[in-house]
Structure formats: structure tokens, C-alpha cells
Length: 124
Image (cartoon, rainbow, N blue to C red; front, side):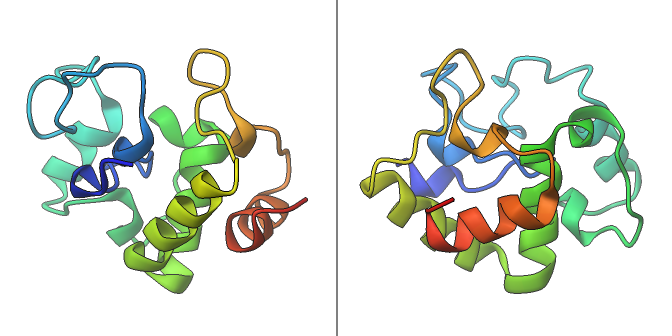
């Protein structure tokens, strides 16, 4: 886990991403989709560093997907450091962030509360 990369503006875990080994996060300019990322552009416009800092219950851009949406809700409740702690523990226990392409164990949910429980416990 590249913990220093932390959490992307949209809520995805840059620290666990295996899609782009040279990427240094969404503010580096090396992230795929850097110039067109709706969540990045919106958070810059609102002068916030992450979507979870916004008071809206937004589902635009990458927040249409359960993983970043659930990660944002988790951070609002428990904090970014707690999410990183849970992700690191879960990774050590075999939970896969990217199993096929960008889809992994955190994507296998249709209910955000079940996803949050999974993040906290690492079990279904």
C-alpha cells in the first residue's frame, strides 16, 4: 500500500491503485483522466480538497460508482485516517482493491451500508 498517496479527491484509494504505476495521485497531473475528471474539477471549483468535504449528497462523475461513493460516506463518518487504516488491514487480510481491471472486492455491493460494514470488518 502506497499510503502516502492517500485518498483521491473523488474518494478512490490512490494508495491501493494498481492501474497506473507512475501515478502520484489526482493533483500530480499523471492520473488518467486528470484534465477531464468531473470530481477533480468540481472540488477545485468549490475550493475543497476532497468530495467528502462537500455537504451535498452528490452522485456525479466517479461518485456514480459504489466504491468511491461509499468511501466518501465512510470518511464523513469516521475520518480519512480510519479509512486508510481499514483498507490497509483489509489488504493484509486478502481483500483485493483491483481484482479485474479497476473492479475488486469493494465493488461487489449494491448497498452502501453493507459496503461500509465490509470496510470496517473486512468480512461480508
